Length: 174
Image (cartoon, rainbow, N blue to C red; front, side, top):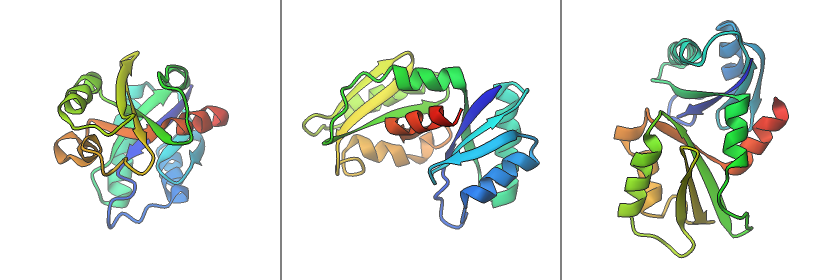
């Protein structure tokens, strides 16, 4: 079966992760047809194992190889298609749209955080198919009140975010 692993923290200081090295870790852990998409921790691969087992194997391999606490979220090709096909916002050159990949229920936590946060014009959030989507004007991603949630240490093992265009690139690799 084809999967994509969405890694969190590939830009952690001191990890010095190159996607070629990450792909090699995946291969050494028994994954097949391994390739990376972009330089931000999106790895497409094949395996006969179940998602829960893959998450455990790959987090352990990544943690040991790069000497950091690895967090990754494994999604099947079908699940990745849902991320792409459920985008609730119209694309615009002035806006970024992000989808959040994470543990079950994290979309509710993110929506609570979003509802508490101050917003800029055209900043929106929606949950579709248990996926949290966030629209924010370009240039405001990290400066927005909600954007600061992305770095919360208490949530680091619960989600990672990707610009929705990443899902299109991942699907082309399947």
